[in-house]
Length: 272
Ligand code: MF3
Ligand code: CO
Ligand code: CO
Image 1 (cartoon, helix red, strand yellow):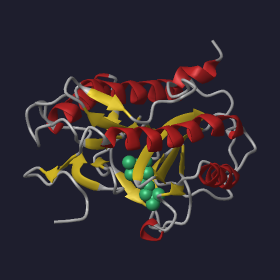
Image 2 (cartoon, rainbow, N blue to C red; image 1 turned 90 degrees about the horizontal axis):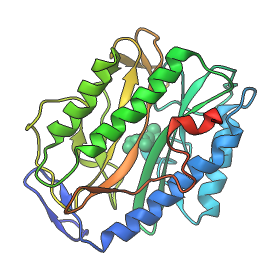
Image 3 (cartoon, rainbow, N blue to C red; image 1 turned 180 degrees about the vertical axis):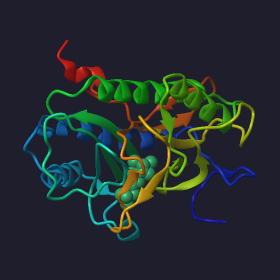
C-alpha cells in the first residue's frame, strides 16, 4: 500500500474519487494558463532560455511548484522542443528564428496535484508542411481524447491517433508515451499513441492520465542527444506534439488542461 487513497486496478492504474477531479482541474488550469500567457514571447529573436525563465516565474507567481525542476536531474521549469526536436528539449541559448515551430511543455504541482500540458507555437510565418504537421498533431490528440470513455481500452486511444496520423502520411513516435498522473508525475499506464482496438487495459471512471502524441513528417525513429534529454528525429524531419491531462468520467472524460483563453488550437495564432 502507499499513502494515496483510492484503489489500484490489476494493471496498477489508480482509480481516483469524484472529489479528486477538482484538484486536477486547478493544477491543469494553472499549467494551461501559463501556456496561454507565454505565447507573446514566442517570436523570432527570443531565446528558449528566456522563455523558460518567464515560465518559472509564472509557476511561482501562481503559487505552484515546477514538477520538472529536480525531476531525474532536469533543471528547468519547461521543455522547449524546436523543429526536429521531438520532446524534452532543454531551454537555453537557442535563438528562435522565423519559421520555427516549437512545443512548450509545462508541468506544475498545485495542492499536491500534477497538471501536465504542452502545445505547439510558431515563430513568425511558417511553411505549409509545418502548418499541416501542427494541425494534424493537434487533431490526432483530439481523436485520441474522443475515444476515452469507461469500457474502451488504451489500445482504442492509440489506434484512433495512429490511424488519423498515418492517413495524413505522417508518423507516430513510438519511443515516448503518455502516462498516468495525479498526485504523482508519472504513473501506470504507459499511454501509447499507436495500437490495436480492444487491446490494453480497460478504461474506468476515475483514471487520470495524459495523452501527448508526437508526430513526425518523416520516419518515427528518434535518438537522444549526448545531453541525455533532447530527443530528435533520426531523419531530422520536423516533429510536433500536443498534450492534455484528462480524467475519465461516467460518460467520457474531462480535460484538466483546457486553455482558459481558448489558445490551445493551433489556428488561434493565424489571426483569422
Ligand atoms: N512534461 C513531460 C511529460 O509530458 C515530462 C518532462 S520531464 C523533464 O511527461 F524532466 F524533461 F522535464
Ligand atoms: Co506528460
Ligand atoms: Co508534459
